[in-house]
Image (cartoon, rainbow, N blue to C red; front, side, top):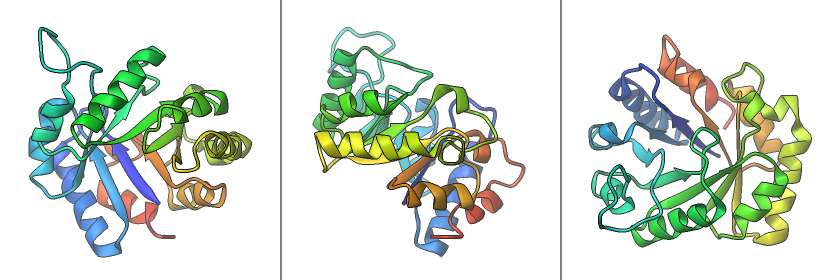
Length: 214
C-alpha cells in the first residue's frame, strides 16, 4: 500500500510533515509520499521523503505563464504527480496531456476520478494509477472505504477491465490505519489523504497509526 499525503494549501509546516513521513516510512518499511505546494517541492525533497507534485500542466516549455512544468517539478525533486484532483479538475484532453508531460519527465502519475466510470476513462490514458475520490467525502471524517465500499470495488473492476497494469487508489476521508486496511481489503493499492495528516497536532502519530496494519 502506498500512502500519499496531499498537503494542498493547508497552513501546515511542510518540512515537519515531510520529516515525520520520512521517519515513519524508514521505521515501518511502508511507502509514504508527501505532495506539498509547488513552491515547497525542493525543500521537502531535501528531507529525503518521497516527494510528489500536486499537479503538472499539459504543456512543454514555452510561453505558458502560470504553468507547472513536469520538467520543473522533476528538477526540484518530485518523483510523481497527482493529476485532475477534484479541486483542480481538467478536461479529458488536458488530463491526457498532463499524463504525457509527466511521462516525458519520468514522473509517476496518479489520475484522480470521482467515480468508477471516470476511473475507466482515466485508466485508458495509461497512468500508473487512478484514485477514486467521491467529492462529497473529501475532507470528511468517514473514509470512502467505509461509507461506500462498493465504489472502491467497482473502481478496481473498472480499471481492471481497461488496463490491468493500472493500480487503483482510494481517497476521501482516510485518516486511520483501519481505513488503510479497509481500502486494501477492497482491492486498492494505495490511499490518498490530506487533512488527516496536514491538520493534525501530531502528524507523526497519525502516520504511525496509518501504517500500523501494514
